[in-house]
Image 1 (spheres, one colour):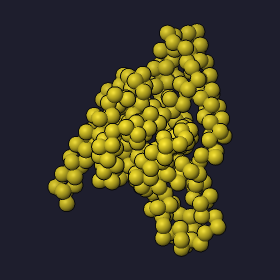
Image 2 (tube, one colour):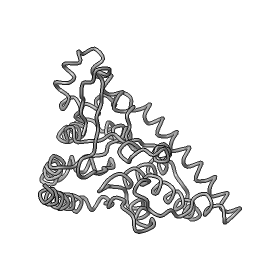
Image 3 (cartoon, one colour):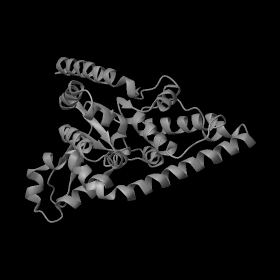
Amino acid sequence: MIRVKPEQNSPLSLHASVGGLAIFLDAFAIKELARRDRSRRNRFIAAVHRGAEVLFSVSNAAELSGPQGESFVEIRNFMNEIGPHWFPVELDPMLVAQRERQGKPSDQSCFSGDFLKGYLQSRVSSSPKERVIGVSEELFTLGHVMDWLAPQRESIARGKRELDRALIEKIKDHRAQHEVDPGWLDKHFPALPFTPAFPGTFAYVNLVRVLILESRSFVIMPGDGIDFCQAVIGSAFSTFATLDKKWKRRVETLPQPNKLARIYYSPELDVLVDDIESALVLLEERTSVSS
């Protein structure tokens, strides 16, 4: 959840946390939840407000700012209904893995402070800090964030393409080294066991390994690099995540046991909402017992 709190030396003091369940929604899931089954949409929003947070990246915003007209309005309204119950995440899994190696906890390892600060500074640079504090919840609705990022859509898309290109080139290079030396893969990208302090590293290393092994039988295409990033972040730092079918399969092949997210693809959104509601009931029961 996003909060702004006044501090003596920092009028732009940001506090973001994940309370309860964390949900990662790919762009396809956001669009379908926003525009299709109204009852399912209402149930999802109610669940978020009961005790869940939506993980959201600048990549999501760039993709969602594309639709125009009524479609965009529906998506924007849906994002506004989420309110401040979201958490800004990094898109670069290598940066996240580096933070884990530095000993940072999971919520700090995946947190995108630059994203949040950039948005806040753009909104309040000419406003008195009293106003910022007073409207903090409304200020941080995702509809406002989408409005802020919409004019930057092309520059964000260029950055995504660069990250995509770099990751694809790395996979191709790794594949070439593996073919020259079959022992190279186990040395540089071993099948890591799951460690709670390193969920991003676990997902990153093991998914790179999967791609290296699979790339012998398929061509890595533009877009696969970004999909890889979302698969790492979504699976490592959420309770429930939506990905397309091939990435769902890849995540589910990673070494067990692990505590990665349960993954859903497009036909499974009804099941996703059912499972979120069931998990919230269990969470509420445990909270009641412990109190």
